[in-house]
Image 1 (cartoon, rainbow, N blue to C red):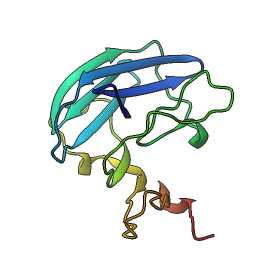
Image 2 (cartoon, rainbow, N blue to C red):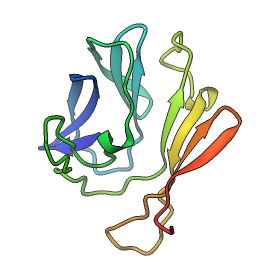
Image 3 (cartoon, rainbow, N blue to C red):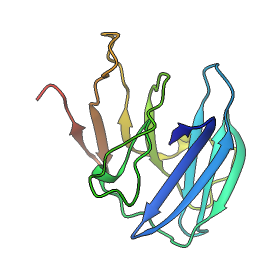
Image 4 (cartoon, rainbow, N blue to C red):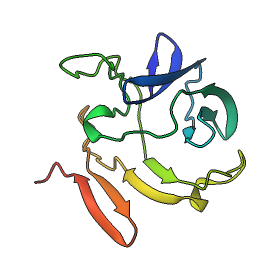
Length: 151
């Protein structure tokens, strides 16, 4: 997810194939943004404040997840040899979560009904521009730190 040139952009990729959703974003108010990838249906959807805004068909049914290929609040070019993020988000990001759902999920089902896979709470209160990036991956009956700035 990133905001580039006044557009809220959601991007998902797997094994060299990708899908991008772009919508105009003009709000300066707190906004809840969510994306959903349904592998069985090969669709990628963007929600703003709980409303489905856009859906893009994909050419893949699974995401090959690698932490080094993900970015929160920045654009990470898929073909960049140095994998350096750009177009940094110039506002606050709070409480990013990744859930797993059954593929039959309806648009109105709340996130609390999914299985939490990862969470970044961004609770750093030092008021600097480099917020802590501690995160937690959660697996069936297991939990591990994804990244801990304190270590």
